Image (cartoon, rainbow over all chains, first blue to last red; front, side):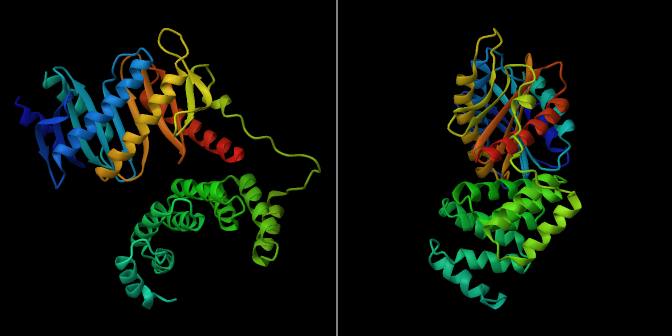
Length: 114
Length: 264
């Protein structure tokens, strides 16, 4: 499955506004499938930055990195799954998305992007 | 002022965004039921004048009208931080507490509002009715103690910590995987995470963020905002399902919020 196919699988989930593969080191877009006027570069940079901050906290606790980060707001959510090869699989979704389905999709995408 | 004044006030605010005209404009929009526009105007004004209790009171009333009780609670708590004797905030919190089923707390807010505004006859009547319904009788010399958040936050030491937005510990603690005390380091990290989350939510249009969940590794984590100026981290081993941790975090957040409110 290509990177584009992997992202398209995520964007077919109802409520998902976009999905990206991001280089975690520099926060740049590797591939993207955005459904509306989202700025992919901004999403990538912000997702990488937030993940790095959270990684600092888990490192302070002596824990390995988590498999999924979910930031939930009143209007939507950002989900990030670290993937092998220094990548992040990122999805941005509406508040009423099926979070369980998206979570599974992101974890599968993170595996497939290895 | 009437709804007819809205276009003129809007034009005035557009000409001078720093004008205090946002207050009557947002109030008129609220009365007209245009809550979305009212909140936009009021929130921008409160952002421009963060120390103005009246601006936060307006934000709270609009959010209450929108059914956003948690957000209204935060805004009225901010009002009381800025102006502890703000009658409207005490009345608003009384209403929210009543709506949430916490009648004892509602009564306390109403009592305080009545003390601050003794000439408010409708409020005095509402207070009397509430007391009657609750069967309340004053006991001289008795004051209800503030709840101890540690009882909920920290049933097992080292698994929950409450910090302020500057990364200073307020309650609880957290231990690293090797058992050492990691509270100070985590508190500092939480300060950075919440600022970053603020930025992400604002720039990506996620609305006000309420929760960060981190799954995986040997533990799951939940980060919550009990109030606008406090951050809660709660963690459990990954054997505890993420959904159950979210429920624990809900309970801890509510307790921490009440505790902080009692402290102020």
